Image (tube, rainbow, N blue to C red; front, side, top):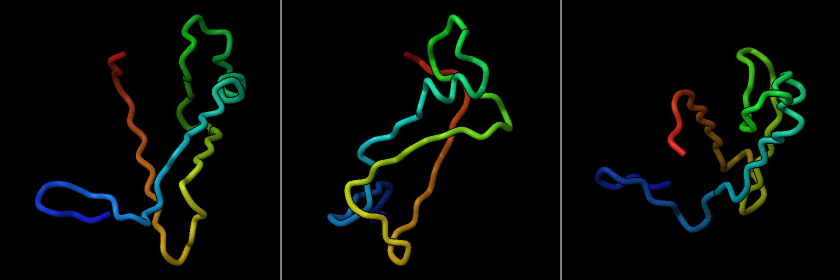
Amino acid sequence: MIYFGSHYYLSANQLKAEKVDLHKPENRKAHKTDEYEIKKLILRRGQAFEVTVTFNREFSPQADVIILQFVTGNVVD
């Protein structure tokens, strides 16, 4: 990623997430929220959960850095 001015730009060979699987059915069951009327993913604080990220190319530990950002709060649909 290249920072120029106040914007970030992706470089041609940059590692990019193409798909994120939150394993909703499995996580809802593991967190005992699968019977809630709300069908969105609800996770319990402090409990592990599964997520799979598929990238546009193979991850290289020598060249790539992965940063995950989790945000909580109100979501507008």
